[in-house]
Length: 496
Ligand code: HEM
Image 1 (cartoon, rainbow, N blue to C red):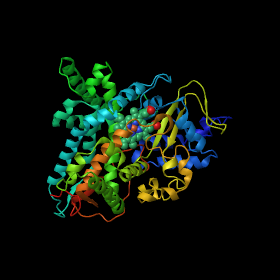
Image 2 (image 1 turned 120 degrees about the vertical axis):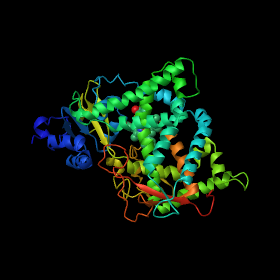
Image 3 (image 1 turned 45 degrees about the horizontal axis):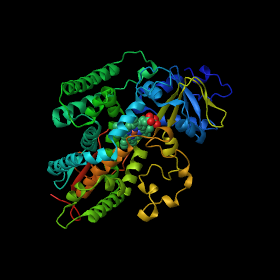
Image 4 (image 1 turned 60 degrees about the horizontal axis):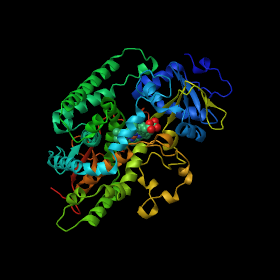
């Protein structure tokens, strides 16, 4: 088997190539996904080089994996590394322009997105989001009892919480017509899931190859495109609405590009992390109790009169309260993202010149890609002791039951938590995602006890395997995960 060492001369300044067989790398990274030891390659490669940086080829693409502190700083701080060019080629399997002035509308999207998620606009959306969450909570209460245990009901959060998050994002930055018609919404979700899950990794190596997966992606993309076009036509014919789409049309923006960007950058991340959070809390009675205590304390603080139920109080909270009074829930969300988000981020050096990697004497050559595997920091036991454990206390001070004050201050080094990105490319959806997830999870905890379960409602006792660390991005679990819930016996519960 050919090795990449034979293909890439080690010359001064170039990052040392890592001697994994070329074919094996292609298979590991992109083809044999479920079996891949993708993470193993990144972690082993890091140890192979003194600086923590190493490089390899995928087909003809030269990828420099940045591992150490210099590498991290270069990855997150260099203005010459392009996110869009990297994503187009290594995540979408398309061919980029190789010109870092082309960002495929990313800055324009971020600008419009930030306008649409300004606090006063979010505050205006609060009642309609509250109604969605109210309906969700009602549906959970009315669901049939589980076969194994009539006291409990069962959900797969990736089939219940995930669609709710889809809806909540669209409420803020989407299309009203889809939200007014359950069928249209289901169809949009179906088409999005088809579009998103059919990413041909073979095309990353051979960009012009026509694969079945890519054909499926085009099919689902066409359905989404037609659904957007249909609404745009109606709007242009005079049917106005107070929503993101109208705002964009009035500004003469490219609405198709905007909506595809929302779908691609926000739905899976938010849908999956909110779902994983419920799973982690079901598996962690101690943190579930602490989050619930926080919800109960907020309810008690804002209860205007004794007849108000917990739901009534939560439904009346302001945006500011949601954003400032749930530190334990937010820490749990942060910890969920650390544990649930595997894989690497990518950039391309399309700047026309080599980019030095700090003081290491190494460079990311012009035309090469930089990658940063999240486990370089998120699974580093010097930064996160017992890194596989779900412990939101890492981010909380002793005052609120955490251990942050005792932790190694290495966490204050730059770019040690990158779950929302870091440096030049912080996630613009962070505020929206935190807000919506806190609203959903606190409503669940105010009303229900959660426990790990199998499909039939029997409690699962086996240790929880957690997200697949060899995955190449945040995703739904390959094997369905269930949790069971029942109305809380006492406290602020609305009960049934
Ligand atoms: C829990 C939910 C989310 C998580 C964990 C998350 C995570 C991230 C991360 C890690 C990055 C950095 C990627 C990189 O540096 O290569 C990022 C960037 C980005 N995210 Fe999010 N995200 C979430 C929700 C959203 C939502 C709801 C939207 C919008 C609908 C969004 C839009 C974006 C965009 C546009 C970028 C690129 C920013 C740039 O290039 O400067 N994200 N996100």
